[in-house]
Image 1: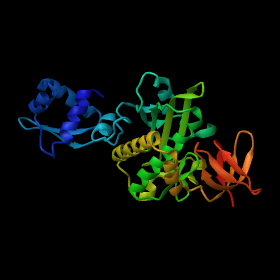
Image 2 (image 1 turned 60 degrees about the horizontal axis):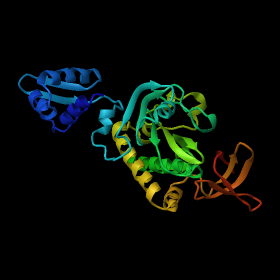
Image 3 (image 1 turned 135 degrees about the horizontal axis):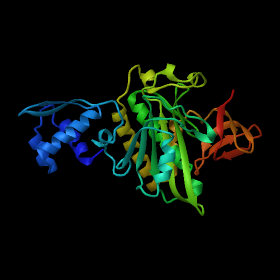
Image 4 (image 1 turned 180 degrees about the vertical axis):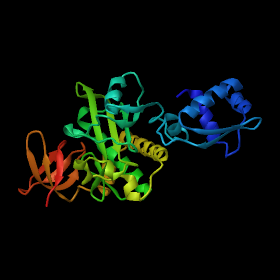
Length: 323
């Protein structure tokens, strides 16, 4: 959205409910009242309910339930993540778009869509992206060796869990990339890496969240093991407010990732883990490992102690719980 339109929305939201004249808005933005009226008409087309009265001014009565960049940016307390936002109604995949523009956009840029037609999970799995959900990707450019790229998935899982827990749900992380509530999946993470000579060029961090998704909208194969924030809380969440909180939390965890010992993040991750202490079966591209999940390594790998008392370090795989 045009920067002037964003600023007009910011002014109206910050007016405390009083009307704001076109002259006042124009003076703040350095534009004419005629241009203010032109922008107001465009903003209304985006679904904003703006009342106007001659010689009184404009009042914002309501905002659409859309993840528009101007809504997210107003009051966003980040210095990096979300400063640039590319918004779409529907895309094939936000990760695909983010990868295609990663070289041209700064670190922290977000690609967000109301729905995806071909949402992806890890290892070729499908992610069903439904209306009312949240689907976005973040372009990250950390200067780290390729072997540490898996840490980003843990960072994202921790940020998601923390933000959801502030809503009042017991969100827990299933290694490596799922967030669960009462054992059912509410969010998934897809981390894709572009690297050269063992050094990361950029990471595309894809996140899908079942926010205000109705359980009956899931396809049959997803219903049994899926849930949504709305279903768990008994009412819809404010998606824009949640996004602001999540982006702030993600940035805080990313700063810790770049400035602190990774052991600090691992310790916090384990405290909200759904996996550590469970018996698991992990399928990798070359073998199947069974045992008890006992920890996370410095690389972000899962430590599994097998029945033969051997500790296996698994950097990637499909994890299932077993009895």
